[in-house]
Image 1 (cartoon, rainbow, N blue to C red):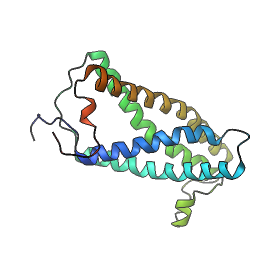
Image 2: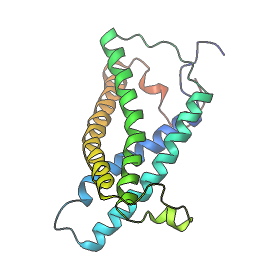
Image 3: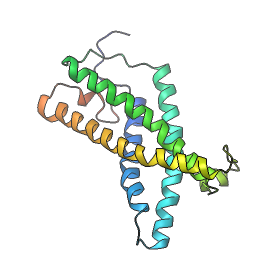
Length: 184
């Protein structure tokens, strides 16, 4: 393959945008579901949705990592100042780390706390962690602080994408957009 590829492959773009939409939905749901004074049935719906979509995101991040490992992107180098290049790499690393940490911490918090994850329970998948209030509380704290970190990194990522797509118009945004269509 040559170094003249201008866009990510379609599977990489589809995985990216599927995860982006799910994460963008999970952030406000996560903050909303723990608010006091919500209708209990609505709050239960939010918790169930959040847990089960979290499982889906965990599967998708593993699919994404395996796909990227098996199909590394071969793109033209992006002409960026060193500080922007560092910020881009650090933000992407942080996002990948949190896309693993958040569902894992959520899983541990729920299972160690003795709560169900309906999709996994329906498939007969047993809890992989022991019931432990201390472990559940630790995972809850990781998930809580991670929620702010991922919200900040997602905002930075969206801001950088908008900057490249609207202000600089340097082709970096179009590497990932649209989700489907031919490689350019």
